[in-house]
Length: 218
Image (cartoon, rainbow, N blue to C red; front, side):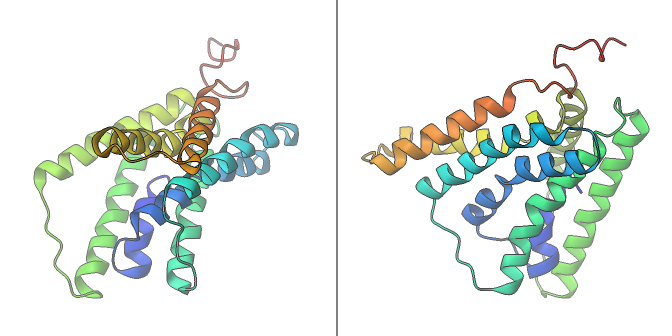
């Protein structure tokens, strides 16, 4: 499930979603994690608000710097809803009963491989297109997936979800450095919201690994 966000569009639509729309949708992942963690009993309801507002700030910031997603297509809307829902709930479930064993990490990678194989098969047989496969790209994606699962185990779901704010922020900053557009108030406020949300999501949480409590050492 933690890799469901990128693949759900292929399974539902037979092609990729608009990158900007998917980026905005995945910024909701910290909110889903907060609600799922509370439902699983790994976090008290009092801590939900402190994890929800960074996600809302990130979405608001992205809406100011990216084109707003076009809604109205049922399959498109379903994919945008399922992308953060699957990723967030999967991350919360994976972090239950830490520390995770090596077998759980292996199971996650095998499940991800099966999911993407299903997405490719759907694209080939249903959509009628023949996606090209690069072994080098597959190997790189496998390494990144492994690092993502290891990071999820080491730092917990909330801080792991900060990637959905940090990566868009860094890409936007890179674009500004290369193109050097005239920065408007919308851009400045949007970048500020993204930066604040990204920093806050990286702060250690009391109930997550490596948060400074004695539970990790125990």
